[in-house]
Length: 303
Image 1: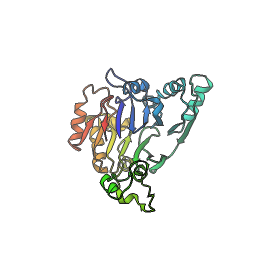
Image 2: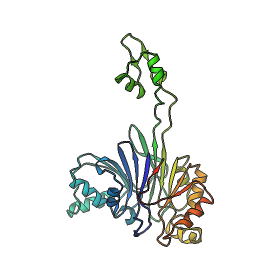
Image 3: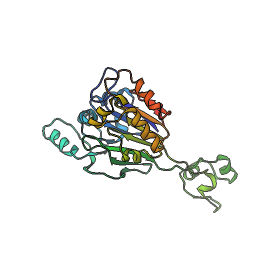
Image 4: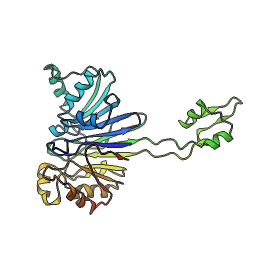
């Protein structure tokens, strides 16, 4: 699993930082979290294929998190996308998209499976596949805002080649079936169980996306035990009162959330433009949670 920040500025873009958008890439697909203005240009720069995008998750309807949606969806229509796209976010997206379609502004030629939420007080699964699930809950911003969490399902243990050979399992399709967790029957009638040739089950990776919010109990619940917490750090503690007024967090507050949630690593993002050099934000977070990384546009992180 890879995380690729596509925009790390809050409110408005700068020459070095676009507004909020982030990709979570895994195997042959990727997920998009928020889609601020200019996100599709950043997607191209990151080398992400829109045809492999499977789902979009919007936190809230402030423009720096949402204004890039109609342009990006229309571009995929122009590129002849036919694959269904999953879209999750706050109530209001459907009305917005219907208005754009009525005015003939958007160009969407493929199915969109949309679910909107007006209330989500508990961590709830909002999207699930055979390989992972995405959960969401509401956070504490000036308007209704969601936080998201991606959890990969546990994976089968590593395949023991020597053990399979010692049991006279012929190489080829049977090995593949065993690796996927399926028991097989050999030509001589013996049944080989996948557990005979697989190591212990491997836990999947987990990522939490926590933008925009004041510190709150649900952000801790969202990030409980994750491998990587992506959390806004709009201000330093010097501006804590302003952060609270505008529904944001300081770098220190993001670090306390990571610490209290037992996250393994913290990625801070969504920096106020008053910090052209965000190193004070990193220093403030590291003083509380040392395993903190500063997000940079298009610099990917392996989870």
